[in-house]
Length: 115
Length: 111
Image: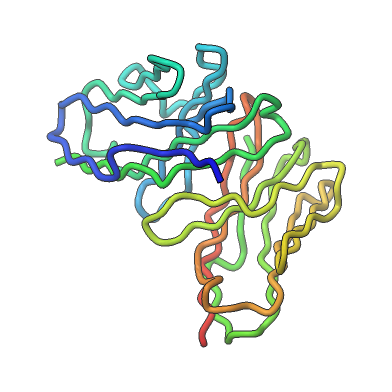
């Protein structure tokens, strides 16, 4: 069964450094998402992306965050200057063309640790 | 703003028991509800998506029901097995198909 893949599985970065988290969504999917889960807390929505632009973003997704689909397969989340509170598990998800009534499929996540 | 709550937060049952996990949401203007399973340190596996026009959705030993008017969904697990031990999350979509998640129910099935 096709799946969403995320790399790396674990990223350790010094505070203030830039980090790029990578995702390969399911190949025929057109809607892409990033979520995060701080340890012990709920999964939180960050951003949704369709047709090469952001369709919705949460208040967490401030100017330090950006997303990009640099080619036909990758979807990236960049954090420009990381803070300690950015430490979390980051999940990428995708859904098919009729995203509204189709399930979102999640990757295994990238654990981001900011030192 | 949509709020999603799951009760209980944790549940421990002996193997073979049938069990019900609860999910409630404050804004009933939803078009579907999705149930996920999360194993420790892992991603979210989609279990069931139930449309707002449906009242129930079944997959194997899992059955999800949805009552939009009361803002509730239940996930029924029949004949539980140790392999069912995981955290179960429910989520509802909003603008931009963003999902709002509940806090999850951590299930332990003892052999």
